[in-house]
Length: 588
Image (cartoon, rainbow, N blue to C red):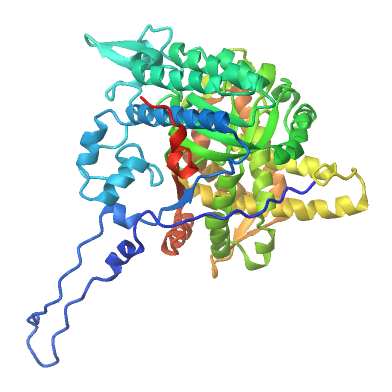
């Protein structure tokens, strides 16, 4: 089957007026003294243009995308349901501010010298630029603490290790001090008022749902927000099949705990299902058990059997809230993260097709036009971008979740490196899946061995490889503070060392070597799976320290992207007004 998607229109513009970016170029220079005169400067009426503020200098980092969807098929009850889901996701904005910045939001915003800076603070939910290695946006702000607001800023790893607190590694507790001693505070106690507000909105949304399984899930998720027991609602979420609307809400990803990778951040995404495309994609999840057996690694590293109840679907995103709306915005979702649920049920993979299309059109293609060899540009396609992203999410289900020594999960063993290694594994094994399924004729609905099917396999793989390389060049711009950015840096350097691509020193353009790329893909797949299976923290650290870095040559190429005005990522115009649902909002 073809994976190509129709283009979708988006309204995009810079974060601030384009003229801001020109200020730095408009500085007037004093006149040189006339020949034969003294060297004294000649007075001039020209005034020196001030240096741009940080926000002005980064005005072009974001393109703005309006999040909308066709809601004409929903009756009044359905519209009321969607409105309350959006409102519940908006509560996650308030919660994420509290987790991101250990201070008063309004006081921080008041410190901004201008509106552009104030808006950049809002976009980043705090004073650090998530697209620029957590650089402080305003003066007088210290470096972002690795543990965010989850732990006391001055807490050492040794103090954490010595604390006899059974739930200290829980995804859903904060570490605080009482009378000088470390204590834990459950999320549902620390954020009680906001969580009660979100839970009430979810329960009200459930009353408007015509899909019983979705209504049940919303009620269970509301309960989970109030007691931090998310496994039952995760199980229920996995069992839903017919709901036309979805919401991902709660403390979910642990990327922002860069101290240990334990603590989860609140987020909320509201999605409308593209049923036709979901039906066409759903069959790929069934290949996971067989693909697991064929992984290029020793048998003990693929002994677990992926859940067979996995779900793959396409969605239009209509709201990003909390942690989902900071820094680089996700274009696909693979959840739940609970290893027990994954082993029992698999995961659901949600492709956010409208956001994916926006990033391809406005960011990835311009990057490729500047940095990919001209005769390989034909291999940069949305078909491949969509496929690489889809199989990345499916590949999260491959490999193993528990270390071979029986001591616990991969996440527990790799700690702060767990997220970046999982993202790296999924990217590489996504290519492996394209390779394996393409050679079986499954990507185009043909039969393995058919000449016309096999003749197109290498072209499809080349599309995937070249688009994958362009995708790495896009993602490394997210910086070392982002798990996806770290993973892409590691892969870029591994592939470069393996000769999977070369760089023309005259043009600064990159060219994929097909055979070396395929070999490097298999070698790195085995390496990452082995590190995960062994729970080898020391090797994860070594690889990150040596390969997870931007080297000078790549840094210079990335600077060319900035100079060309190519956005790093996107931000959203969103909410009930944008959706035309303000009249259906719940009133306080």
